[in-house]
Image (cartoon, rainbow, N blue to C red; front, top):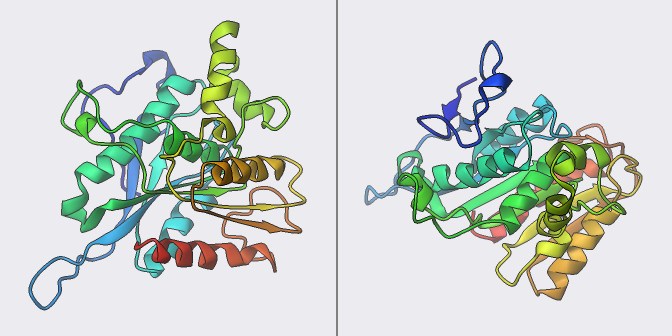
Length: 278
């Protein structure tokens, strides 16, 4: 698997004490799944949409079945993909959020060389990776005044796809372990301030990108009310969204190939993206 570092130098919030033998778990990177560049009869590149995939894993790891196979599925539907190898425990909110924002900037900055439309970049995530995608879709900027050239590029995604996602950091809805890794070790006052900022249903604005969501009603790890609350918030702000709730299925289904109901979600998501011009 190829790893493209998100930063040429030391990434922000890097901690030497967190180093491991191969560095792949602590150096934020993207793994590309890029289709061959095609040109029209006039020699112009046919630009494709792109999906940045954030595997789940409670912010302590990244599940393989929610990464590469998902990118390959979207490749089969004419959409480029990258798997985001974001930092996990013992890193917290500061490093993890910077990884998702930088990933969107990096893909947009390098869009031309990969034949990607810079206005058709989606962020997709599963479970805790779904929370990361939610952060990316609600906590972004249009470019910074400091940093390198990539930092000056917008990190707002053009669409978000949230798969049985941890949307909320509120006690009523959250997945407690994901919350603990992300903000649980921060000072109490700061932690409470961040709950609103990092709860998708509380952070939606009129500028939040169109959002696709799916969940199962029987998920007892990350409850379906996360997606329902997000749908209500999007509706209140008149943001286009699509929500699919399948009746049965355990948490962590990935492409859900063995689930008679939920296995429909990848095709539904690909169709939704195509309708957005991806």
